[in-house]
Length: 517
Image 1 (cartoon, helix red, strand yellow):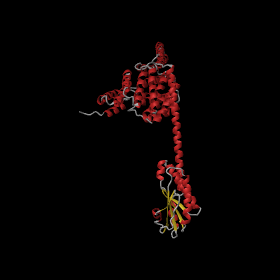
Image 2 (cartoon, one colour):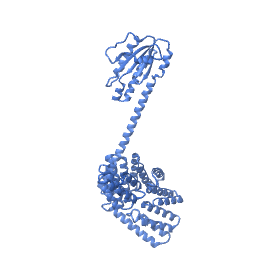
Image 3 (spheres, helix red, strand yellow):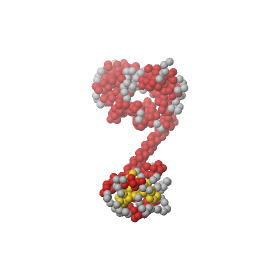
Image 4 (cartoon, helix red, strand yellow):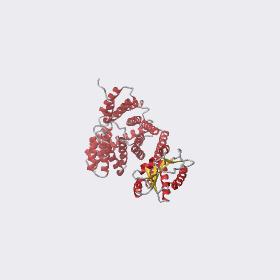
């Protein structure tokens, strides 16, 4: 018996749902039969794909049913649940149940508030913006689409960014804000492909056509609109209707009234299959103008009457209890939007503060390292070579528990201690024209010409003891002092590092050796 690769089926169905909804529907059902009801997440994903496929096929009731079945399985899967809620709301909107769709988008908003995932917030804001577009409040819709795009960019998910960018660009285009719309369309075009997202690509061509028409470039506008129609031929009836309406307007301006009427009749026939009146009212009004322009006044009057009927039906549907939520519900929505916006601003401030704190910490550490570099080991060999042939004494000062202190506090704290120790040694040796340098991570070497150890050790230990007293850490810093006379500068450093301890700090009394090896 052949094993069915369910993840591969779902992946293929997901990529095909926008370009071949029937195939996606078939693959989703096949995957669901193969995995069985126990694989809850997989079954929920298959219902999501089926809901999207039914919506693409304009089977809105079946799409809503599939979405509800998927919702029963994804209570603990917030991102999947948000996607299913989104497609359920789209099916409800297509059935004219605008208030119910708003409630569903608000459920997505609740999910985004709980999980604080920007991709879910983007979907919620996009859907609520759709509601305000439907009730003809374009400025409010534009504000929400801007916020949706902002959240989409935070999410970093290309599909959501493209979806929000195209929708926002549409709002800008309709308000003739071309400079704001074009960069969004270019960004979306870079994120999607015509093979996998023909509907979105068709929308991009449609909005490009609108922009060209607004700029007076009729030929370019016509090419873009015809390309949008070609791309949307396998689906996307909303895009087809809008393109035909705009082409009809271009034909009217070119006094090609027969072509304008043909486009409008085709658009009306397509819109009657899915539109609840939002598009039909403008189509009938355009048809009235086209028929009047070519002298068919009876047809123009009929189109105008059809416009009034469509307008009244549409306004009536908005007043239906299932279409327009109560004032209390809208007040709750506004409050939630304000809370999310406040959270977003708070997150931005916290992120900015964390970034500034990290930058300050990095700068402080670089400063410490530059201070350490001033006493680094680069000149040790040169100084020892310069003194070759003279009697020289080396002292090694080592911070024994540097790693323990750094792990307990931070590496910056350890660097600070090393910098303090290096500065103390540099100050001590400069008084006597001696030489001090950092030899390794936690080790410093002092070069003292002649046999001056007895006169060096006591004041050096006193300086180190005073330094340790200022270092308020637990565990307390421990310093070991070693010393030796140099007979061969080539092995001098190895000798001093292997020399027995001369003193340990901190301690109550200091013992020094009378004779050095």
